[in-house]
Length: 77
Image (cartoon, rainbow, N blue to C red; front, top):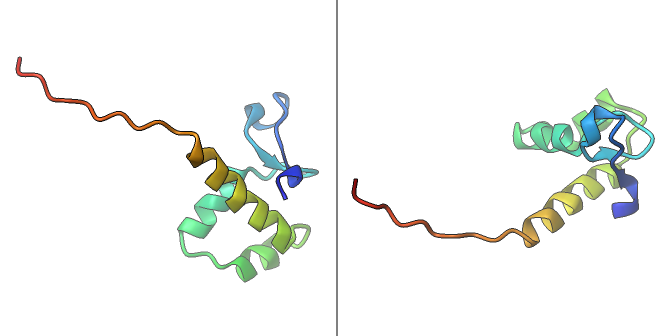
């Protein structure tokens, strides 16, 4: 599925996009986070597929796996 996602510095400043489009992964995630259904996205963007949306979700999930969380302590001034 990840092969559906690509990045090109000449398209949208290098943001990850759905291959063959100028639609960013970020845009699709924002739509889903705003309670826009998969069906509505596919209706509004008929050139996308369910697999494209799933690839965006998988890309986001894999991106989070490599994050490192550091707990910072508050220092008195």
